[in-house]
Image 1 (cartoon, rainbow, N blue to C red):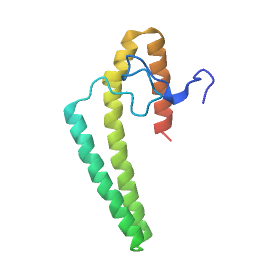
Image 2 (image 1 turned 180 degrees about the vertical axis):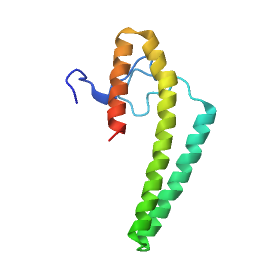
Image 3 (image 1 turned 30 degrees about the vertical axis):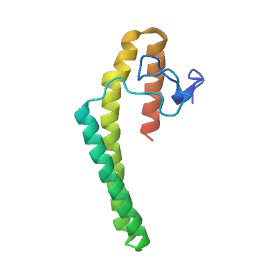
Image 4 (image 1 turned 90 degrees about the vertical axis):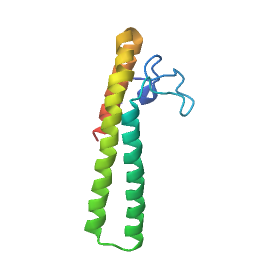
Length: 122
């Protein structure tokens, strides 16, 4: 982590994605969420949940390792799809609002976006 980002990824952005108080779990909320995108993400997450339960069964049943690895890759890609959808919403609404505000809010959002990008490309 760089020294110019002392608060790290948990830095709250007032006016960005909601509440400025990042100390309370679940305290921040998105500025706007496309209802269709939300529905798509919930469907994907339910499907992923089923895939993970299927993976547990495969391991319990001593299924062939390559088959399990293939299913794991499928779960990874499904999670990446949810992440892409969330990033699009975050950029379109939360980040855009904070950046339009300018000043410290914009700077904090730039730091948040950089941290998000570096965390998600690993």
